[in-house]
Length: 304
Ligand code: AMP
Ligand code: MG
Image 1 (cartoon, protein in one colour):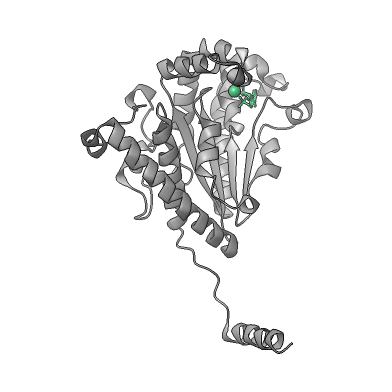
Image 2: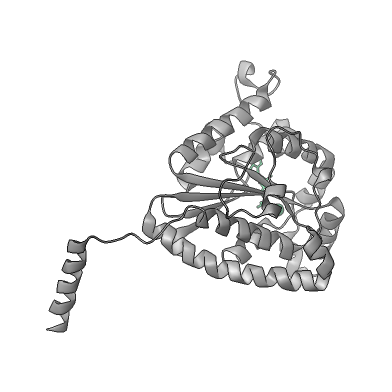
């Protein structure tokens, strides 16, 4: 897959999952030394550089979001997935901190309710999708239905036997549904960017222990996270198959090195800014007669 447009940088292109090649997450680095350039700088200077980039991108994002809103043509859908503690919440907080909340909506996907389970698995995301002019962020998403549910098929909704997960090709069917759904969104003006925040098992242990280090952080710790950690290899397998099957030219997956928060956040912000800049949007132009009307309105107000 090729990322279109000059706005995408080489490091982004390297992090995109190519649909024609099987994914082995062990081939993707989780650390900070992502390029020769960064390696030469060393960790401290690399961190400083990336933090400056993030600050710059935040300012740019604020500007391009305004143009996106004024243009009212495109919607931006950002999907964040990753193992527990991968940094989804923090990334959203840091990347989006400067943008106008009116044009941005964050939706978290929890265990489905009974009502949600009584519909098909893509149903619940529909009312949460961004409108034209908006940025919508999914903190987890319908991809949970081929990840946690694949690792724990007992969490699958009731389906008639001939449609259930024991049927051959059940998960492939879901990948196909997702691809078709995303194609539909893209064809109707949504830009989709999907980020897998890739952390090492070692870093997860550190982050879980950190949550147990002081009482103010206990709320972040869930015993469930520890149980899921025991399924690390099954999750890795589910992620690899999902990334391979659903990274498409129109809705690519980026594998984001996420052991260092300053790397992951800068990466995500940089891709979002590049994608929106690549749309080459500009503020809507008024016609001559519309401008004349505005000038008349100004004179009327001034002569009050
Ligand atoms: P958190 O992101 O920490 O708030 O946790 C949300 C939890 O909901 C995670 O454990 C997810 O795996 C779980 N979850 C989200 N979507 C689904 C789904 N479709 N089926 C089962 N569990 C889900
Ligand atoms: Mg959690």
